[in-house]
Image (tube, rainbow, N blue to C red):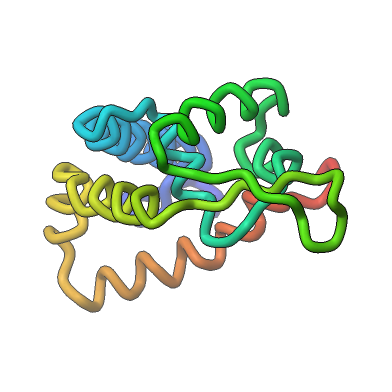
Length: 149
């Protein structure tokens, strides 16, 4: 008992496989973003903006410094992908809002992720549903981990 079998991968095997899939998906995302003249980080900003977000909230979601987000948003705004607007609850706070051009562009980026689409297309509907359910269970734990588990 306790010895991993082919059906029971080790934690290390799971972590390595998850990292490899994540890295490949990240490379695919970056390549699709580049075809639209965006850096990977600029595309990540667009992907996060499903509604208005403060610069601070955006920095937290991206796990980066607010000063980095300012430069990224500046460049996105200069190209018409986002707008800054005052928060309706606190006029000192600026919210970042995706424009229609930004929404259409990130939609195209996601549609053009060829390697990721090919990988997911290799799964049948039942496998896709199972993968979705598993990832849906993992996402909140990974995005909002309990303090020092």
